[in-house]
Length: 95
Image (spheres, rainbow, N blue to C red):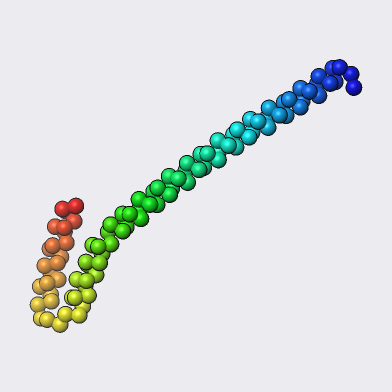
């Protein structure tokens, strides 16, 4: 191997090392971006979970009312249902 061939071999090796470094840096950036994306998804899921938990008391209240209506045998049941229909839109407007 003469001097020009040695120089060419060194240039190829240095080029391969530089190319590998560039690819490694791009891969690391991709991993960091993916990690940030997953963190955001976790935060969004936590927020949605909190929102659902916050709505549970209202669902439980409605369920209690429906259970009472279903088990109540009084004759003024129809009037109570109509009253609840009138109250429900008012509660939704308050939010």
